[in-house]
Length: 357
Image 1 (tube, rainbow, N blue to C red):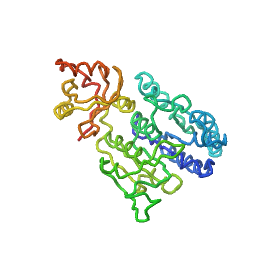
Image 2 (tube, rainbow, N blue to C red):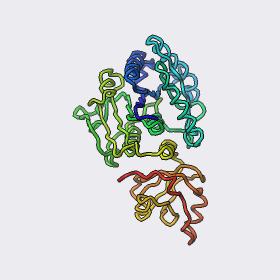
Image 3 (cartoon, helix red, strand yellow):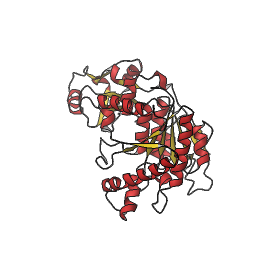
Image 4 (cartoon, one colour):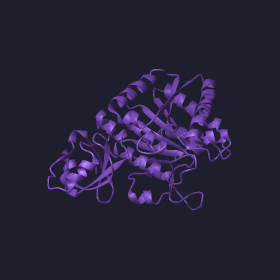
């Protein structure tokens, strides 16, 4: 894998107008820009939303069940991509995935191999969406396509994640409600305070929102990825983002992703939200020294998880410190914490991905 991959995530409101119609002009612009970047030697991986909104419009029912709407809308959405791609002499390769494709190690390696093989074809653009028909919520769902895009950007050692939103970046206030709201051009640290100031304005059809985008950007920043949030309906803004020029909001990386091993990328891209462990300061310091996590350092267990699942490690402020593969399940760990035998290993150092301070 090389670091010349750009992951472009396109939001529902970017692709679908207020009447529920697909914005084919936006798709045309995006594909034309992607084609230009490919000719310059870059690799483009598109993560698309919009299937649910398209399906509900096609069915004439805004209350249509999400999975049914997704199943009906996905082929209609792909038809729009195919039509615009054909006019540019391009082909679209549709990829429908769910979290197990990243959680299970062998499936993760297979996904890497298959998508990397696509990049050897200069006229094929992969377009990814989550399998919203079979997986709509729960631990096997990414939750939203911002999270899916981040997972793929990490898995494929992308040099950048571009989020094409209906909002042209991060603002000091909601620009739709406050005329004094100002665009924040650059973010060096996605702090908890910054996230509290942002609205989680997820649409009816989409499941993201600015909070989701900031969580995505925080994870990408922690592993050395630049994230840029721009107005996806503005071709000039998108082009500036592809050219690494100022546009929208740029969230800067905190470390070099080149230092990540492929196993560490797997741990981060496959992370699940089924459970988390709160640890004390001593355990946190030990993890940063490359040590394993022992039960003695665990203060609280949130949610449930089985041995072999990937779990988030947080501090007492609920800030993310690391992700790791659990050696034991949450029930067994809970029993251990109630006893005096707390020297039991919870996660081995080789299966931990610890964020830098």
